[in-house]
Length: 483
Image 1 (cartoon, rainbow, N blue to C red):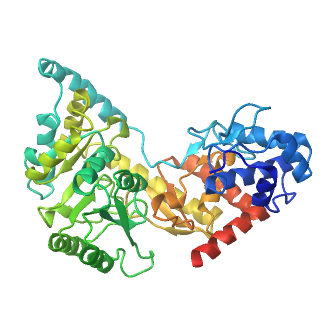
Image 2: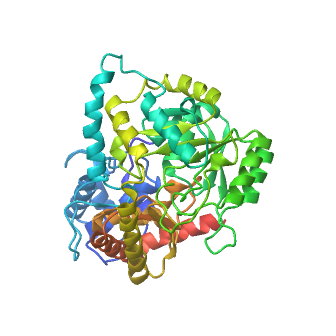
């Protein structure tokens, strides 16, 4: 990998970048930013000096200086003016303005799908937890399984939902992501395959790769297909490829919001048992049922199912409390893996979580009503301002999955912060660069902010359409995808 880029090589990558639609420094900065995000300019590479690039491109040095300054401000270039900046990816959002729109300061974050705390309920749970804490202070405070009162509450919740469960079948974790990391390292590990829906939850894909495992994607059918899941494909993959485990989100799938029907669940449970694949289901969104659809927990169809739960989506991500439900011998294996990572979760949070699990439904009625309003607003706004986007209506969860008219999800993600919005590009939800045609849009913001965000998306989309260089990049990606 080169440590620096000469001006001739950069000019060749830029192509015919200057359309005249915007100031030259803005267009230059935009195209360089896209090249970095696409990987065509590697990270930590020194760009040409201002003087040499100005000479090669036939521009004034002032234009190059302004373009580099813009890239530094946005976090795509390190180093001060006068030194050769090196390419980078921003690690935090930078406040920007949104021309022509009444945006709040900073960025509207559509990259994450999380809600603020169910305030009064969470606050009261922590206040009560502090009154229970003195009884636990004489102990060491380490409990790799989780404190008994929380495991008992979680087991009782599963039992009430039709899946008889005992506390020794529960392992408390520091959130669902922590749970998945434990499971993948225990069941799959290096070089083993893990079956996943395609698209899937991006942090799950990251956990699978980090463990050295290989995702085995099975595509979800289009929303207008008669079946919402390719069950035949999943069953065939289990029997033919023999993956060590399958990671699925059957309850308001992230990112599509689909709910898997019971007869699919039953068939998958049978296929997993006969193929030796451990079926791992993520139920963190199960409580966010917006349309009243019904489906039994996957573990109701097989005792071998491993379930992941959490309070992050239903109550508050700041709790950092999740859990694994599995057979007791498998829980013992998970504990052995867990102790190589940490020795247990924070006690006060677990005491508060126990109270929240025991009264799980208390904040949900108002929370679900708010989400229904947000979803309706977002769907209306997308239809009005981005009618060319094909939108799948979710049955629950927190997000809408949209198909774009061109494969420009990454480019839109790069441009959007200029208009005040932070996005997660479609390829984050897939394997091998898939889903450039797609964008996930959460409806976790209130309607007024959603309106601002959708108008910003419209402005960012228009900018892409008005830029010849970006259009050429998108067409090249589309030809590559077809080939």
